[in-house]
Image 1 (cartoon, rainbow, N blue to C red):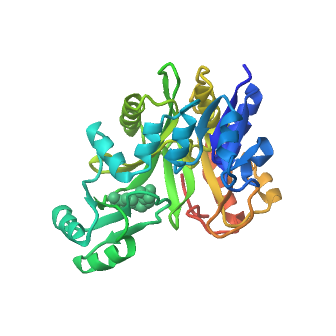
Image 2: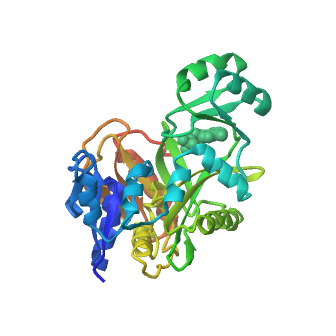
Image 3: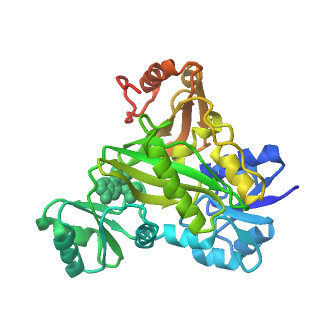
Length: 373
Ligand code: AMP
């Protein structure tokens, strides 16, 4: 079995997919604007900027997938005239639009905050009247990491919110969810319909970017089966193949879905060392039509992102139980440059290891020296 998988996008997610594919003798190729991307060391990159780039990329592989959820549907449509893509186009189309996404969650009885479509100042005023305040106003397409959002706390902000996020865009107004924690569930579905789920990750953000994930999410025994049921509903409904992520809010009323990502996810990077089979390997297995591996946890882990500035590798590697992953990216404020998985032999050492790491990271994150897990 010597398949080649073509991946839309060539960032760190593509790089880690290709790393997982290598021992299975599966090659990867990539379709990306920047041919000097993080995945380039692991496979041929076809440029989105050249005229024949897409045609050559389609020629280069047997089956296709993606690491970039804003992969243009028009490119996928050209591809599917001759080759298959996993996950399916429908999942991608829905995930690219928050309104379709939330409508699907409603249809599948996955709880979401009440929401309204907004496309004018009048409809925003109407949404505020119907939903009450505060609300979170978001662009229906294109936003990520909290960009393209406005939290409306008072009616006097309506015009400002519309001026900032409207007028040309389709928006969604959502009731503000009073959550205690943010968690995510990642699952994989094979071509035969098998579904496997990893434990919930508890996610902490800093300036809207994921800072670290704790896995399994503490005190999540009751939440796990519920989240598992929700994501399984999505996977089966979409006849999905590959890895899917569902981001959820924990509230006093239970779990509320925020969004789904039709791909491997930053909150699943811990699984490279922390799970019997990682999200990357299981995604590759699913796309290639191979049996799925176990998603069991080897030991509890904390995954910490490296954002903006690199720590000294020597300092990280001197920590007992730290695994360093660098993406070969140049430093820039707010940019994800790599991650570190903390997985000490003794679980009791996890808090201490987090504190030691917080001391040597150059950028302040939500990870602090006085944290307790
Ligand atoms: P998103 O771009 O939808 O992932 O949102 C980015 C962040 O904004 C989330 O991780 C939450 O912290 C916050 N957020 C998004 N939607 C809501 C909401 N309806 N209520 C409260 N906070 C929200």
